[in-house]
Amino acid sequence: MRTTFQLLLWAAIPAVLLGRSTGPPVMRTGAPVDGGLNCTACHRGMAVNEGPGKVTINASGYHPGRRQTIRVIVEDPAALRWGFQLTARLASDETKPAGAFTANAGTLVRCPPDNRFVPAGDMNGCGGAPEFASHSAAATAPGTSGRREFEVEWTAPANNVGDVVFYAAGNAANNDGTNAGDHIYTAMRRVEAEPCEDSGTPSVSGVGDAAAGKALISSNTIISLYGSSFADSSDKYGARKTDLVEGKVPTQLACVAVEVDGKRAPVFYVQNNQINAQAPFLLGGGPVEVRVIRDPGGRNEKRSAPFRIDIQQYSPAFFTFDGRALAARNASSNYSIVANPSVVPSGVPAKPGDVVVLYGTGFGFTEPVYQPGEFPWDLAPLRDPYTIRIGGTTLARENILYAGLSAEAPGFYQFNLRLPDSVPDGDVPVVLSVGGLETQSGAYLPVKR
Image 1 (cartoon, one colour):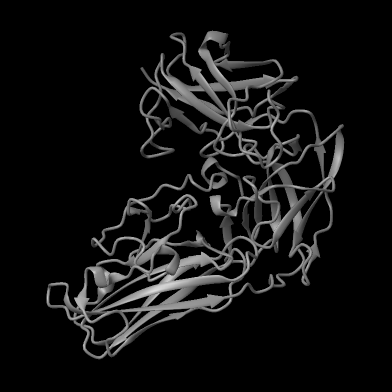
Image 2 (image 1 turned 90 degrees about the vertical axis):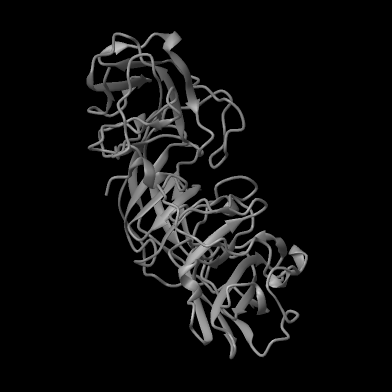
């Protein structure tokens, strides 16, 4: 499996907004930390929890990084239409979210303070703010009497964060087309973390840079590991903002850790046969040992046999969409995707004079140097000399507007380049050379006047 640009970035999955009802505004679950607000402000019938029904949250203990179904059950003998709102918080600090909800055809996800909707497929969620899941218009089931069960997909926090508290409000409506005469109920449920499951002993079959897959890595390079039994077969987990530890990408994610040369590596993404991580600082040259650890430090800890890979000072590689088409955006055209439509349907080739942004990893240290897992808080240009060739011609320095770390992710570099008038039309090769090593051959940028 080749790691592409979008698989690396947990926030880079294209998404389409779902059709939706207006739904309840955020912070209406009855959670005390949100002021105890519930849906009686709009749905006027009895006071909260004074109707003949109830709302129940059906949730069990969570496994770190595991997607599971939370059921919100609303019951009322007089109701003919249904709704709900659900939030998940850390029991240790209920101002903070716990895990993330999945937006889909039956579930809308909203963010405070502006009631912004989270698009389906967006793994960034509310960017660290509490999330609120609620019903879509289709899920209100007009005409259904007595009881309505809502299924909400929730992905647990990446690691054991202690107990999680769910708060829910249920709306048992009379379906008369107004907000009058409806019954509102609230509930709370507290669950605890379950131990990491025994998924067998992990096995590593390959390691390389996450951009081109070359079997060569360097300090702070984003790497991909391939093998088996890294996670349960159905599990996939990408690190979110809420998973950061003191602002850094964690070195344990969804019951998985990676060691390179005996040092723990920040982990971005985990699935059964692939892990994306960042190499730690590596000194010297030659081969080093890489291991995957399941349930590190836990009762089910399992370590893979060592996999040996060469390290050097540099391991330069560009990210691509398909192995050859460079992952690029056009800063001169609202950061639209630069690609042939056959590769990315919405892509448009660049033209001379445009400023394009390319992405890569393994280009060596920057000034200043950032630690593994650390997000750059300012510009960090490449420290060592380099050249960039486009179409076989070395790019003049005045056309290199920036070459260094990107704020998007640790170990992730970006290059803001102005295409000179001399660039020909077609699929134009781009090569960066640093320390005597070059980015992968065959990588190209589409250009059309």
